[in-house]
Length: 466
Image (tube, rainbow, N blue to C red; front, side):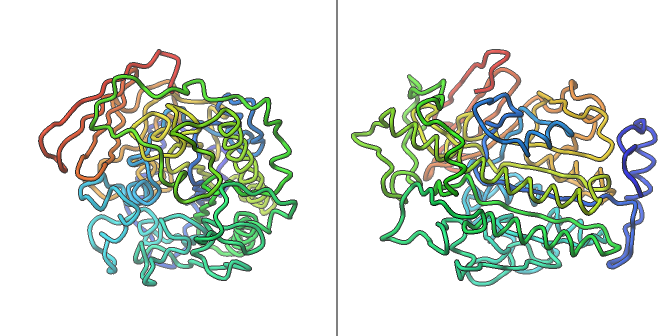
């Protein structure tokens, strides 16, 4: 079925179409060509600093082109500012409700049996007749398995093909250096820029694998849900030299918000990210201070990695076009959370500030009525699951807190949420952060749901999000 007119249907007609798709779920293996495919691309640590977001100093032509044909979300907020917990919430549709849900081990709470609690998103698509394939970092692991070899999302994937290549083990891909190099106790530079091919770093290899999977899936009758998780711009800032050469370091703009906020309550525990200062060497953080030269170097590395992963996304999207599937495939690009690049005098994530919680979200839906538009509606990562389920006629579990933002495709100017809520913890201190249209309130408690320790309040100018 050609999908070019998909979103030009009126809302009543859309409802009838969705109802027809959703009431009778296809049996496993049954062909249902009316369901659009889904290409879900997760990009680690991708803050909304791209050309399509107005950052003209960034070279991101492929993501910019995707946004020009889709809908860009200017205020999308992660549930938790760390990889595993954010991905757990997005994939399962659940808010953090246990201490473990705040960290990278959140998926362990699902157990190793399918059918526990509401179905996670890929499980629901698989039960609806989709072929589901996971490549790279989608859950917190790099192949869908935890350290003991157990599925992090039991029953979710038809295939989780692994191809560590010269890195020999999927665990080394996230912190990989060129040509099989990996982070060890004695080898952990924070930047690397070797003059090598894209495939000599992990994301280039992953793009090749995604192309092969698309070619394989395109021959099947079933719709597919292909999830591709790229690693960059996660640390280390390691990418082929030609992507570094896209930037003149002396002309790289520094953060417009470089100072530590004044009057922070003690409970906030403002600290530099250990991911930056302890896990890597050569970070240049001396006497609790980042020099201007070091801030420029780290920003240069982040931007180079963004351009590198943008090129890999472009290869995958070009393949989707070559195979003739752009007109029947929903493409999602999602950053699992933001990242401080000198904002508030910090580098890293793991804060309740805007820079750590706001991330990239672009959806390109066949028949896009407002191609190239953006929306300032407040949305949460939790909302992605019900949205894709509605667009694809897949049953969404009742009682989950996510809200479909399908109406924004009809009218990007409308509101969606009054508040976008996020969570964080520092030891035994837990935070709930509520972002409204113009304000952010962060409430700290002693323990999960315990007595209130302090409240932070921030006001934002109407036209400024950071």
